Image 1 (tube, one colour):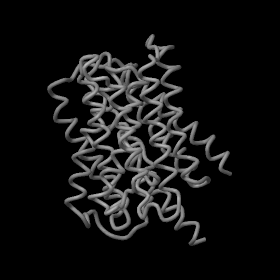
Image 2: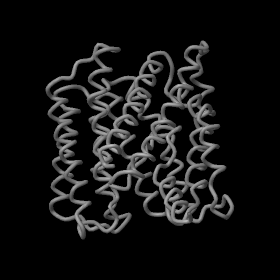
Image 3: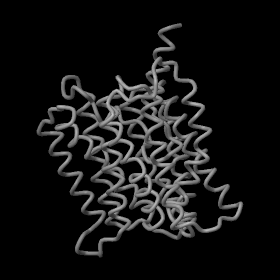
Length: 318
């Protein structure tokens, strides 16, 4: 089953990579704000399908309004950062930076979850952050706004993941999904007035394609995580660097330089080491990285962990 789960996860991340290619195509003509607004608009009916199936009794009042507010604020910033980074930087370079998310999750889990991080995971974080510097290469090349946008996405996604881990068992799934989604839609809608460019039907269809690909990728992850172990499924995200190499060369004439390869290799190795350490019994009380299963900067990619909990409860009920 683990082999089948890994194959499904590979397919899911291939869908996400295709999602990012369309984002990059549209990013050459439109502001990420405009693209994200229409992606959110087309994601709404897909997201509603997930919301109406929430059987948890209660209302839409958050149990932890402060944490929900922070999570809602970080969602639009993280999404815009990702869309802008994909539009302005080589695909492989963006992925390499975003792969640092588990490193920051590990760091944030100390003050926010009370996680005790030993010398091994701490060393992996330091090495991984060095890998980020290798990819960005400050001083050797001018720091671009795209790099800062990608780092903003890493910070936003890490905060969202930690907050979900902290309050996810007490908040209704609909609350965890609805408020950040609404914040993204409203903020992008307000900002759209300043950046709007007329979109032909083809480009508008492209934003719909982004929404569908994000949704399908998330569904694939639900299936993969429900079938296999997290330590097998989670590393499949790193396959996106392969798709970035193929798609970047085929569609945008991008080539993978040696520095990015080295930096990405260091970041991936560090992330894998953290996953292994978390999976060893007694090493982590919260396993924050292993439980970070969602594509947190794609509007159509709903929270995978909440769907897994609902599926588990349904299975137990039957």
